[in-house]
Length: 183
Image: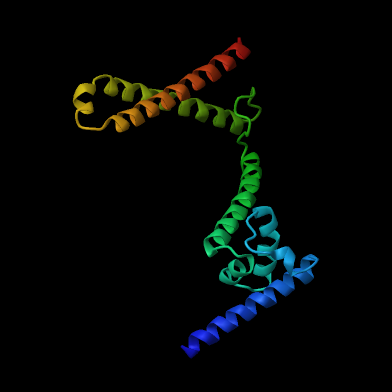
């Protein structure tokens, strides 16, 4: 019991020192500006970054902000994702892959010609696979399949089929637009 009290006291002291550090480093008016829970991510992120840089644990940060440790982990994952997505765009551009995939393209080098042919092969392979799958699905006995599932499951399959059909129609429209530009 005494060890638990000591741990709780130490945790409270770390929380209070973290709050004081936030007030000093971020220029907040007083501790009242940190009234937990700090639920808005935009207000939380600078505090989370600062406390991580100064060596505070995620648990201590969560205690300071009045949120759970999971919220802090989610924030950190969100930050990493934001940093990665901007890095990924630059990486794609350096590799010669395009961000705007529907704009016209004229190969100027041997490598860009190879990439263009690879995209054509990818389109051809994908449509061939879909064609084969559609032939297989055409022969499905829907009455038999429906007898072994609930109505809500059938509704989910109907929704999924609609999404796939829209995706293929979208691809068809994009191919038609590119074909019209080329004509």
